[in-house]
Image (tube, rainbow, N blue to C red; front, side):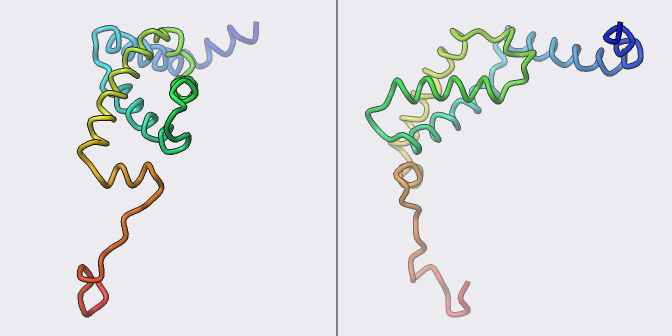
Length: 126
């Protein structure tokens, strides 16, 4: 009875939440997965930094767990594990390409942040 009373008292908020969730599900089903792809790309880089090389299965499982932790619960009902795994494969390929092209990203992952050179600092200290 309390649930019905709550729904009647807050019907507009419930309707907005359900509408947003339905909109996101429709976008994902249509292939609009840019948000999820960007999230996976960032998580792949973080997993590589945290776990290093030779731990592929651990990194893969961790990234999938991180995705489910970050998605709203209602969306996890509509986003299958196989979709996340396909997008993860794509994000991993993109990340490997970026690592090969970008030495700063490789340094970030290896834990060696770039240091400014002395010649890049002028006489005012800036």
